[in-house]
Image (cartoon, rainbow, N blue to C red; front, side):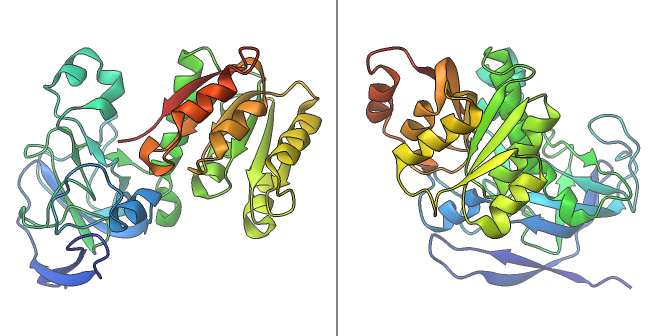
Length: 328
């Protein structure tokens, strides 16, 4: 027997403690569904929002959480397939990407492959306030509500039946890494067999190691800390070698260590998944000439000094290109 109410965590503003609220079980229209949350990750974006670093207005109070995996517990008569046409029904495991582009603005109409540039996006776990019925718009809750008529930009993807939902919740951050390498391919900066350096050994860095391997990297080197569990996990996910920044503490020493590992000339691709201001200039020096540095994550996270980075790009010779690969 189901409960008559659903618990939802909301935040009233930066620095606020979470408040657990109860809302009524919603009625499910014909093209909508209710998804029971099985797992929801805590993204770095969530932490930055709570610290007051987010650069745009937010609809406080609202429910955070956009890296989620769940199970459909109720669905309308027309909610029968996912975005790729796979059949859906009660009991199906699913994930929903957070971004819902409007489909009508300049970027949506002319550059649909770059939906993250939508001028009026709606995000689960970010731009949908708690006051909007049925109040279930984020992963920090028992259930999340999706309605393809109310928010037609919503995309729902079916997960494999045997996939644990904790693993399913990692599908959203993994797609960020895959998208980063896809953009690198389109820009001509990444190709089969390239040597890739991943800066940062948090969840995005570890997933980037896996994505680089799956997308054809010849060699992958991880730079981060600590050894246990992160660098050990990076090697398990496919990193050929790792550089521990707690042991190799000076930037020039790390640059030399990376160049020694890859053969002296430097890497073909460096991807910064750390968000630290020092990573960009340091990453440039790990590259061989005429190759590319990429950033995965919103640029505001690291406050990257473009003037400092530009000086590294043009000290005596053209060393590298820079491409931001960020989610809004």
